[in-house]
Length: 225
Image (cartoon, rainbow, N blue to C red; front, side, top):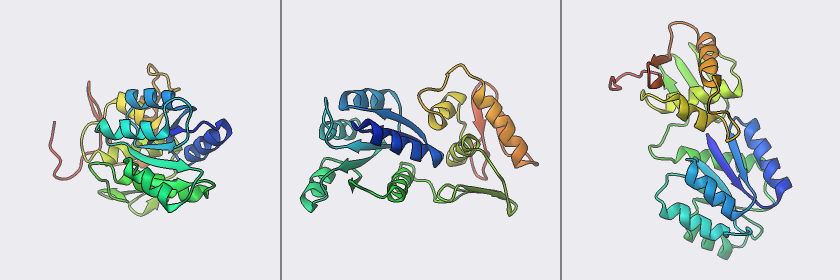
């Protein structure tokens, strides 16, 4: 899951980013509305955690821009005001959810995950292919009923591949969805991560390499190609 945190309080922004990264998410940070707008137009984010009161482009304006672009990105708006009127106004701008400061971090995580699940096409809360089961909320993977211990990046790669429903996912997309903006686009980290993931998942192999295109986890009924 790729998340952008747009928050002008640097300490809070980094605290949110660190916490979400511990939950296995790839997180970028912008400290003002203009930087948030630039990042959101370059990268496809699943969720944007957006402070309403920002220097430069306001959170309200940025929210309108994201909605008007037709992007599938979900917006969780943060505000220092928790009044009903303020929440209604924020949601009327097109925000998908609203959270008043101060907030409990577990609630923020739960809301971010819920918004990501509402992306189009919607993905089920638990991803299953054959005897493999991945639960994004609990951060667990099992095969044939036995737990499989994965690193955060291995888990993220597997989650993206399973959510693709049998479609091919390129190395570039995996790098974008699982790692953050600091990842080297010329690195072999995706290939190495897929290799170790295959070993941990065991036989029979689940992840196919589509030469020149990327990787996929075939599912029953998925089109070949």
